[in-house]
Amino acid sequence: METRTSDILIIGAGQAGLSVSYFLSRNNRSHLVVDKGGIGDAWKRHRWDSFCLVTPNWTIRLPGKIYAGDDPDGFMPRDEFVAYLEEWARSFDAPVESGVEIRHLARHDGMFHAETRNGDVFAAKKVVVATATYQKPRIPDLAASLPTHITHIHAENYKNADQIGDGAALVVGSGQTGCQIVEDLLRAGRKVFLAVGSNGRLPRRYRGQDCLYWQEQMQFLERTPDMLATPGDRFKGDPHVSGRDRGTTINLRSFAARGCVLTGRLASVSGNLARFKPDLADSLKMADDYAADFLMKVDAHIEAHGLDAPTETQASLREQGILSVDGPGETAIEAPVALDMDAQNIKTIIWATGFSFDFSWIEGLETDAAGYPVTHDGESSMENLYFCGLNWMRKRKSGIIYGVGEDAEIVASKLLEAV
Image 1 (tube, rainbow, N blue to C red):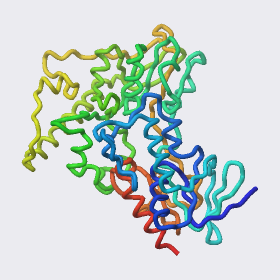
Image 2: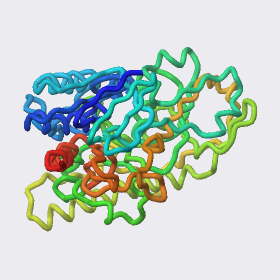
Image 3: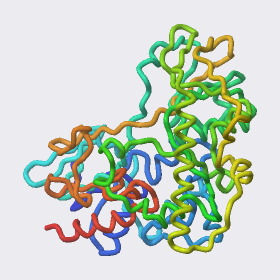
Image 4: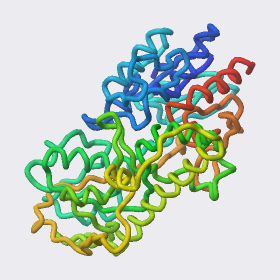
């Protein structure tokens, strides 16, 4: 067993860990960044081949690497963004060591001791945990009831349509990830079933601007955790939106029109029979209401500030999938409450059911009732232990590329001040 010592240890070499590293490097402060897989590992390994960022390139405001390309309104593909991170890390010679998986962190005798999977130890006076919130893939217990001839994978392991062979796929979960995987499968000509949950949806563009532009203008991204109705709202699924093809609006009704079979939530599995809750209509209404509320808020913002923004016709909004058809002419989507998976040739289930977090590996960490780290501006109650990149850590934008640099600068300033 080997023990190595450093002044500051950063755990995680994604955009959060690298942002903190940037500010420390700029101030010539010695530190070490460790990561299980290396720079941008989660982007490399846990995104599918056609993945694109869901936020426009202009929102890439990493410290020392603000986007300055010729396509600010585009959306970087996965591999291009990983290369962007790697180039950025090289620009300030980030001291990243790959292949280091921290399994336990404890503080004693004024030092933190981070134990790796292979038993080596990294000792440091100060530690920044930059492992984000989405750490463990969440798979429903009912997966254990699936027949052995049906393959099932979590969305983090989905790469492309070739994985599902010549059969149909059932995607469980209709957040951003589930919807983008359905889109990928439909484009490949595959038969897809989608078990729909309760998620909102946003127009990709409205009144001449991307939805992120309007969220930024209306200060939605500056909201703080105390403004949420409940602490649990920090972990709600993000609304449907995609960056593919320079950004597209996702509407579940459009999926149905293209041949995707929509169902309610998956309730149970017994042999080949999958049963679903009769709640599809409620979920579709929730998504539609979410979109309509957003449009209303944008309209009100434009009017209140006297902004010059193009208007949209109802026909155009429906054509883009931003609005659904309302009124007597609307055709209800018939949702099956049960499916014989063999009869439907469903050979693969993809769990787009999100992730859970687990910080139990940090000994003595103060957490809230949900097990989430208690922090103030990234500083925990444990002396010299900091966080960066957590969802809603300081603001709504804390967990996304657009806001992580702001949080990192604050965390780094605390590290530089600490004795």
